[in-house]
Amino acid sequence: MTQNPSTNDTVYAQISAADEQYFMPVFGKRTPLCIVAGHGVYLTDSADNQYLDMIGGIAVNVLGHAHPRLTAAICEQAKRLVHCSNYYYNIPQTQLAERLALLSGLPGAHVFFGNSGAEVNEAAIKLARGYFYYQGQPRSKIISAVKSFHGRTLATATATGQSKYSQAFAPLPAGFEHIPYNDTRVMLSAIDHQTCAVIMELVQGESGVIPADPEYMHMIEKRCRETGALLIIDEIQTGIGRTGHFLASSHYGLQPDMITLAKGLAGGLPIGAIIANGKASSGFHIGDHGSTFGGNPLVCRAGLAVLDELEASHLVENAAITGTLLQNGIRELSRMTGLISDVRGLGLMIGFELNKPVAPDVKRALILEGVLVGSVGDRIVRLLPPLILEESHVEIFLQKLKNVLEALPV
Ligand SMILES: *Cc1c(COP(=O)(O)O)cnc(C)c1O
Image (cartoon, rainbow, N blue to C red; front, side):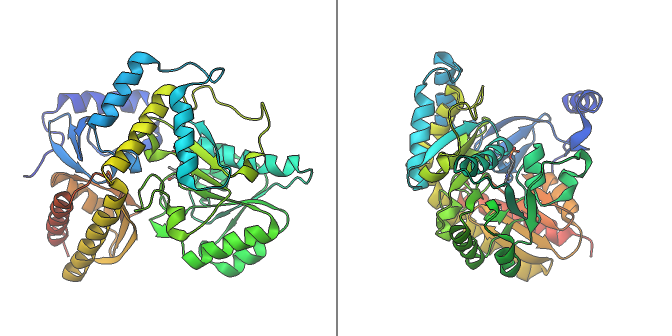
């Protein structure tokens, strides 16, 4: 079943040409596919080819595509009430806040909704600074890791430990400092009594799927307690069951002061959430923060449907099980082909490293086999499939990956 993405595809030709003319060129040359529909773990392009979706909208489509429960919830809510502003209470927003507060296990948890990951990380930074401001002992220093990714607003791009995301946009907000990831010694001297907050990912997604060392994270937590610095765990990618726990923080046995969520939370509708414990929540007073769209009934209703479905179909457990199958299968292919030098990740957040700079070739060849994956740089292939992925899909993926690896020119 070899597929040919763009032959005789006038929709693709028209859309890609118009995109080049009218869309800001930030995405460069995109993968040459125009996606028109999706169902389950499959996507369909404008030439009617089907693809096994192993990147899930970058960890967003946790229920896959056109999931009946999510679609029904969105349609039902759209007919009732899409938006009403935060002047008023709305039922889905309060219900979703309650569910997330309880699921987080954070003592005295309060939730705030934004519309994206960057926006809620930005809110977490404000909340941390507000917390010390209202204590009458302002602190500004925010520490994050080298190679981290926290978003693209000015503050979150500055927190992001990769200068390519911020260098063109100086002057950048002050007070940000980067420390090497998984390096305990530097961390111990960097976090001090001037530190306002530490923001960390438990698996660095955008820089190549790099898990944090549990001991390192526990020492960060301990150091934050000693110095009074607030600990923010950015679970925008690792949250919502991705790693085989609802939150990766539970994997690590961490009790952060704040957790940020986005990507998978509403299964594809734009949402972000910050969950803060009772202590950190005091950093916002009335009027200090807000959002026009944030927490509107439509997206929150979708978020509730996602949480309901995760529970009803045991999808978090499924992420752990299928994630292990996938990782084991890729390790097996590594032994068979000698082309894969490392396999890493947690649950259904997986990266594997090729021992030659052929990740773009592997990605392209997989498209012809009907499989979509992500890549980081030219050596790392990244998988973030929907959490509804089944064993049969894992087998299909491994077979196609095997075909592709075996056909690589040596
Ligand atoms: C994707 C991501 C963000 C940014 O989220 P946006 O919704 O794109 O703003 C922040 N942190 C992490 C860890 C992410 O994976």
